Length: 212
View 1: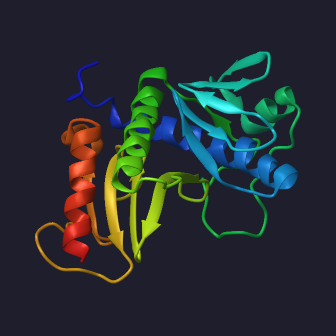
View 2: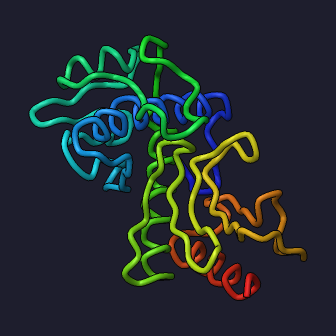
């Protein structure tokens, strides 16, 4: 697949919703109940927990010690049961989320999952270069990877109602005006348009300058 191509949008959205559900209900919720944190991290091929239980999503698969489960016409309840955790979000911490329950059927397409994973990997590398010593976090509420510095959010979203595909964003806590600020929350550009880590970093650096 060429970097300029986009998967069928319906497939991309369906896959993103599936991955978001797994991130929230199978990784972050059980991690919160076991280890007291909802923070997830970008990992090679996808994303992972930071503490027990040791779980990772690689492409369109859930990986646990000694197990690899396909995210193909399954449910978060079934996945959680297979890896020995209880499916469910971290209770009482936020209002939004994936919008799916443990028994809802999910399915992730490998090509679309790779596109989303690459967004996280590229974003993580760019954020660490922008802010050396930063610890980018994937938050399960909105399933975005981000850091905050001086009242400005920097990150990568796997897509949402604003833009269906993975995009980099800069979001000042106080609204700015000007050509760069093209989104209701600040600025956003599709990751595929930025050409890799250097392009995403340049986008972040421009936003940092303009945010003042």
